[in-house]
Length: 244
Image (cartoon, rainbow, N blue to C red):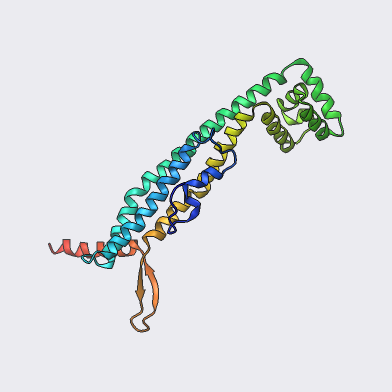
């Protein structure tokens, strides 16, 4: 279990991957890229907090210089972290597509048998298609299941949604290990896609800003981030260059 850094949102902790649907000892290697991406993000964000604290504790730096020091560090390392997220999501997507294609090809092959057309015709005429499918699943009737599930839903009178539900259950029966891998990969891909945006949000929060105080009231009226500080610095630099 990785250490917990209370300065960072728990959603980016790498141990989250171990709690996803489909994750176990056998699928862990498949989704290792997700754990590595979160580990990189977690360490990256922790380093920003560390660098910021060190910069603000440095007596040779003004608060503005310290803030830019933290932001420079954050900006320099950000791309490396986001690349890990993008690469993991892309690889998971490719593997998921491959597994789904294999499952689909297998059931479609069986659906091409001559008797399959008769099965679908009888299914379409039935008033209890769901009941018949549940019975076929319970009995492991591969002939009925493959005939119906290996063809377009309309040929059996099923909706796309019901067809998808039974196809998933059928594959769980026939190829549980493949479905376990598919669930783990899908869960990990979805998690990275959903939480990836937090990296930028947490980076901005870690870098922070400087309070701007109203000289008249002594109250904080806003907070200037590194962009505002950098813009002021660059404006001064132009004047220096003009009179160099």
